[in-house]
Length: 350
Ligand SMILES: NC(=O)c1ccc[n+]([C@@H]2O[C@H](COP(=O)([O-])OP(=O)(O)OC[C@H]3O[C@@H](n4cnc5c(N)ncnc54)[C@H](O)[C@@H]3O)[C@@H](O)[C@H]2O)c1
Image (cartoon, rainbow, N blue to C red; front, side, top):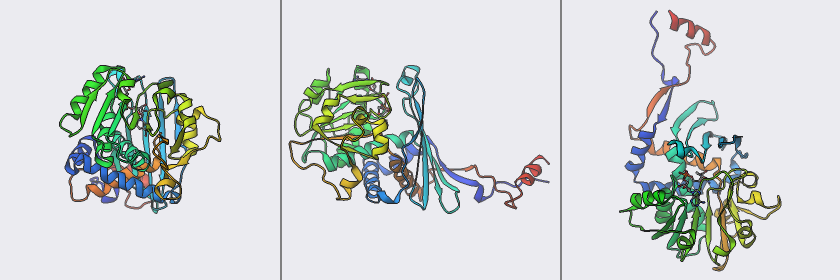
């Protein structure tokens, strides 16, 4: 008996890294970042309709592997993501990811996607969403401390969404700063490489920290932070891995994604369990105040939350329509009789 090819029900669209890169260029990276920022903000506005849980983390001496699930009752998503700060020494990335969207009504997957590129985009879009709600109005200069894989995405999102014109860079490794400067040439941003974090933050209205080091690091100390600054702290995202001196938190108003997760993973792990924070969804939905005065120091203690990945996957799925930028993967066994899975296996041997 001949074995019939997989049916439509067996197939799930898959976005490879190559196709994701084509999709980003097809849309245009700044447009992609602007649209994704709006999609994430829309989902933050309907925050209460989502299942929420701190992500499930498997820690090791070298790093962490995490699963990030959520659902809005109609669509389910999860992301697999790692964080291994020493990987770059071996020629591997610190962060890699892939993820899946599924239909809640049947449990069948509807999209599988690379998410290493997509995580960089969604992290940058989330930072931009936070900044447009919290940063001082008219901010034009941002410092980026830590010039690795995330840096250019952060810069372009702040340009496209918030109108940032000048980026000041600092990294302990000058080659990382040079790489970022090279990649941002021609972007329309003025890009200035700096020799110290102090030089980088001078005249910056927004400071983004995106360093990778599995320790309680002190990338910024209290004396470096003047009134009115917005800090976008994305690198402290794991127990025992922070970037800011705790005194900065005492002078800041702190905004988070999902407080139960951020209390485990974010800068606020250094603070008591009742340290006051505001979840960002309350600000975007108008329930809580964001920036109230020009002197206020605002801190987005970013760790990355599952709803941002849900938004990003749904955005990609919508943007794939009318393109050929995905392949079908034969990933769901589809026996002719749904209860005859074993028969399907037997027929394959004949
Ligand atoms: N919040 C989120 O949603 C989110 C999402 C993705 C990544 N991250 C985190 O962001 C961080 C950056 O990620 P990446 O993919 O760009 O990592 P990466 O390894 O590519 O880059 C990190 C850079 O930080 C630099 N660095 C390390 N210590 C430094 C210090 N003391 N001062 C200045 N620079 C320093 C390194 O030289 C490197 O260039 C990681 O910690 C990662 O876990 C957070």
